[in-house]
Image 1 (cartoon, helix red, strand yellow):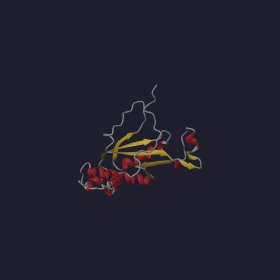
Image 2 (cartoon, one colour):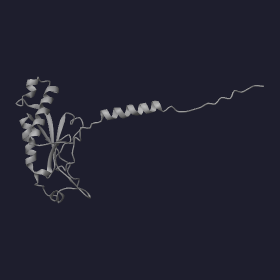
Image 3 (tube, one colour):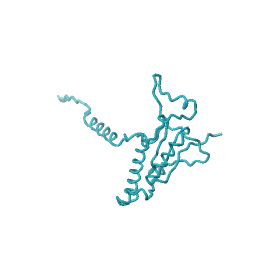
Image 4 (cartoon, one colour):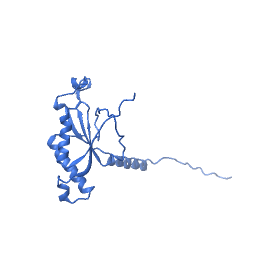
Length: 182
C-alpha cells in the first residue's frame, strides 16, 4: 500500500510589501507635487490678431503675472460683480488682483518680489556675483509674461510694468488668446 501524504497547501497573499510600496509611492507623489499654487489664474484674455503659440520649452524660464478679477462666493455659487457679469469693465479697484504662482501681491509687495526674482535669476542663471545680482541697474534676462483680463483697467498692467522696470526686468510678454475662427 502506498501511502499518499496529505499535504495541505495554504496559499495566501502577503500584503505587507504591497502596503509598503503604496506608502512609498504616496510619499513620492506628495513630495514631488507642486503645492505652490497655480501658475496661471483663470483670466479672460484679449483676442490677438497676430499671436505666437506658447510652447512649453519657451515658458520654462519665464514668470507669469496674472491680473484677474476676484470672484465672490454667494449662497448659490460663485457670482462676480454686476458690471463684470454684464461684460463691462469693473472699476472697483478692490475687485482686481495681481498674482504670481497663486500668491496675490500689492504694489509694494510686487516690487519686492520682482527684485527678488531678478536677483535670483541673475545669480543662478546668469552666474553673476551677489553684488551684480543685487544691482537693479543691471538688466536681467528674465522674461515675464503679463496675463491681464481683457476688462482690467490699464493702471494695473501699468503698475506691473513699473515694478518690473524698477527691478531691472525689461523682457516683457503679454498673454493673448487666439482670434475666433470664422
